[in-house]
Length: 338
Ligand SMILES: Nc1nc2c(ncn2[C@@H]2O[C@H](COP(=O)(O)OP(=O)(O)OP(=O)(O)O)[C@@H](O)[C@H]2O)c(=O)[nH]1
Ligand SMILES: [Zn+2]
Image (cartoon, rainbow, N blue to C red; front, side, top):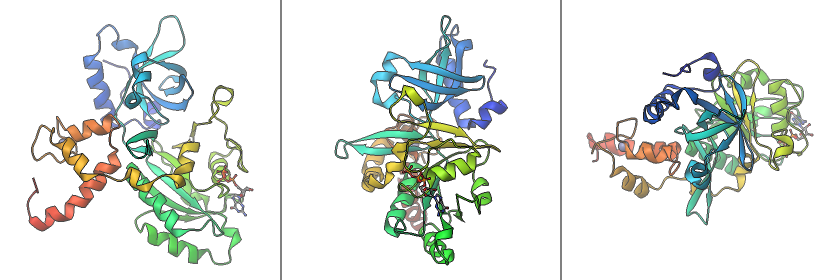
């Protein structure tokens, strides 16, 4: 049907079985005449009215269909996978559909009534801190919670290890925040310890860096990329350049992996942590529409919860948090609760 399907190019961009399945479904539903022109692509840059896409056959500028532009639920964000149509008279593509999101970073808007997704499909978030006045365990703990709520895996990075005679003391405290998370000490300026961080950026995986201003995210980005891509010292990163006011970009890491640079993610410190927490009543309300009464929301057909995740109404992380909370009760009772 389509020439795509796990080409090395798509895999390098983070293509998965779930995405292929969603694409197949969308192609089945599409006008047979259009099918050869429909291809998956990853959103690598977001401008006011256009998108930068990375596809199996290279980079393209793209426009949204009017319907997608008007619906906040289908507005593609950095990291999203979309279906893009080639057009006869222009090199620009037209984005026709949003593919389901694996993870979502969102912030609460309208006083917590709504949520705005700012980055999708990030697998690993490197939480960066330094052994100086930035080292604030409660705030770092909120980063960890926000990352887990997004559905992504946190990793903890202590940068600027040259500033302390005793990095181990900081590492011990950091490690206690998330015992299962990878933990690395680095000096982004000299590159010391970078090998461990590089090992987290495997082909097909998408990573992002968060942490306060000045902690060394841009320096670390440049060290990982092996070039001066991001401006250090608090200036804006390279991105869509002249076309946008807010730089948001995706980088390819030499050796594999993708790195999202998104100022919106950097502001995670100001997020309301409750805004991203799961509301069990809300999820149970959605789950009432699942086809199966004992649906576990882990991939059953007709699952209303997964449908809500795909629409961005709730995040994969919220569902995970909800399931994690239910699991002990389920074990205790020895049978499913519903
Ligand atoms: N001593 C020391 N300084 C570092 C290290 N890494 C980065 N810096 C310095 O810290 C300052 C801030 O680094 P940036 O990389 O711009 O920090 P950032 O987190 O990207 O900051 P924003 O762009 O404002 O979010 C720069 O002067 C860097 O040279 C390190 O490992 N040791
Ligand atoms: Zn379900």
